[in-house]
Length: 327
Image 1 (spheres, rainbow, N blue to C red):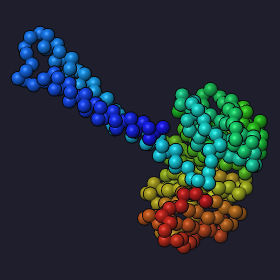
Image 2: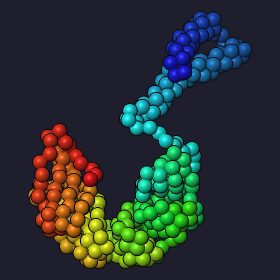
Image 3: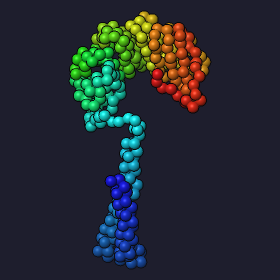
């Protein structure tokens, strides 16, 4: 269909040129032949207006419309060959920011709609079909979600009045209730739950990033104490209701790794190699072994810790790796 349109566009381009040429010839559009009578002036003005219309049509057919079609076609071919689109969402769903699956069949995804509201979608058949959950009317966007089972989920995001929001669902995402946050929190970015009672989230306010924990399944949240030098957090991981590790950057643009052994209430700074670069994500398999990834100077970085985040050692990556963003 696109090829046929482009072929018509080419023919139309030359047809338009012929029309303009014939009009100029027939109308004798030059200073020598155009009379100064009122009828000649009206004829001349009509021809000029028509020529302008034809030229605008030529530009549309030649440049603008084909470019839009080619961009649409290119976007459609980005998907890797071993992936398939299970479901495309018509308006109002425009963006999905996070997804959490507890099995090969149950998943919850959250995001935004075109009318500036948050959205939560549930699938019980592995992503083939999705149904929309019911959110509080004040939710404008959801950026993170985590489910520990096919019934319990926690989601975080923003409200229409520019404040952070934490939501809890105990029926698999069908309905959501709002938890209580400290008044100092203006936005929440991501959330993770170790159990159906202990959850960890990070966000920010005007002074920098914040770490928050909940011990009652997201109903209420407490702000932890981060070192004053922390500017923002890029990633975190908790292996239990007591042990958590977070990575980010300081106010002087240096990387930082933090460890908490009291469920996020207090945090201590670990020791990083001077070549750590920018750390983007972290994961731990136990309260002793953790791995963090990132990059520096167009070269990937991987760090490991065998003492619970107190010290970190840099590993060796293939030279072709420029950045690692997730682990």
